[in-house]
Image 1 (tube, rainbow, N blue to C red):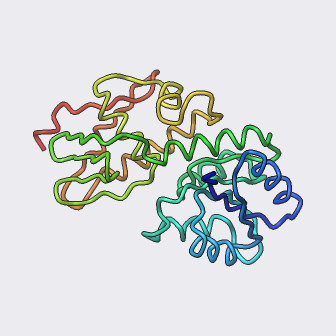
Image 2 (cartoon, rainbow, N blue to C red; image 1 turned 180 degrees about the horizontal axis):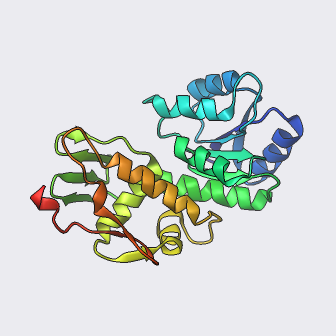
Length: 236
């Protein structure tokens, strides 16, 4: 069996124990850390497939570790789910802005968590999409999962890549946040609609380079959601 490795980063043993039992039943292999130093060591040495990260940790916050992972080329693509008691909207937005792929507040149902883990692993694995999509100087390579603006490679996370791939494959049509969740995150995945707005903002920021700005290809459709429009892209 090809077990997927999950790193649980939480300073409470009872939480780690509960998560480990639920995940092992679901055929995941679990690694555990109670602080960000041990967590980073395990990430480098063990290469987990996904990280469950608490916010409040001894010796530094989970957010600090998340920033470090997203700054490093070797760990930037590692999927991370924030798993924390911080439930205020500002905290959710901050966690997603720093680079978390999902955000779950305690208490939570283990079955929901496992469903989100599986959905996140599916959408960050690359699937079978190997198409090459191009709009003027914007090029998306499905096989290598790279995006270029002219000669400049763009830095974007796996969720932003999947969003862009969906948009470029379905241009000139408005999608609601709910529809985007279904198409990009997957049906029956428990992700709040405001999560879409955070990733759209990150995608727009990623669609900029020193020589180009393609952020306006992602258009806000008032009262509906978002649309990818390539009209006028060739006139830049």
